[in-house]
Amino acid sequence: MVFKTQRILKNITAIIIVFFSLPAFAQNTNSFSVKQAVDYAVNNTIQVKNALLDVQIQKQTNREFTAVAYPQVSGSFSFNDFLDIPTSLIPGEIFGQPGIKIPVQFGTKYTSTGSIDASQILFDGQVFVGLQARSAALELATKNVEVTQEQIKANIYKIYYQLVVAKKASGSY
Image (cartoon, rainbow, N blue to C red; front, side, top):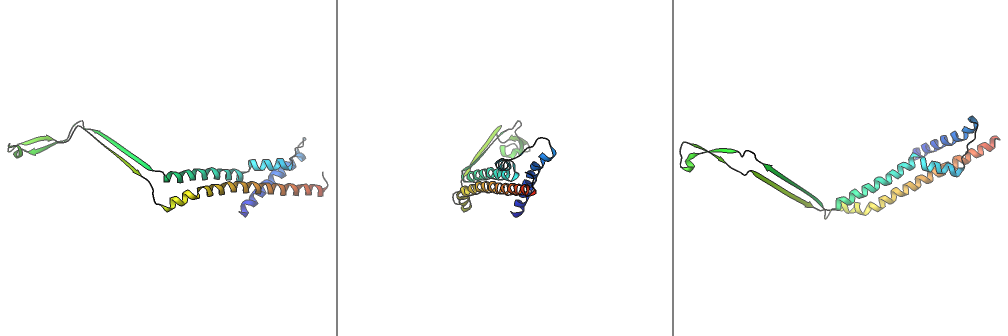
């Protein structure tokens, strides 16, 4: 967490330094107010975008947990068409014709089978705990977005005012 905050601080410092140094290299001067800098940082930092993606991921995870509790139904069907029904040779003694093999076909030209399977989880503690924890997990992800935005704002304000103080101390207004 500390490393992440330091990295955010370095990125924001670099952005602000670039914006403050632009007037030194260009003819027209651009300046950011503190509000503009904060708005830009909150809307464009990777950390805020990642936190917003985490909220979307949590919403999808909640949907998956809900789907586990729903009844599960599956079905199958097969149809066979025997163009040539298998033929077996049986001894002729069965039919009163000794010494002859009689060809006989067993089966039907068409066969079909079907099945349906339905199941539902009735007593699984993990599923029920997961269902109860959905809203808390989503709230945590949402709060994480707010915390990330507040950290970005605090860092921008800190850096901005440090630069203002440094500018006044150097005597260049």
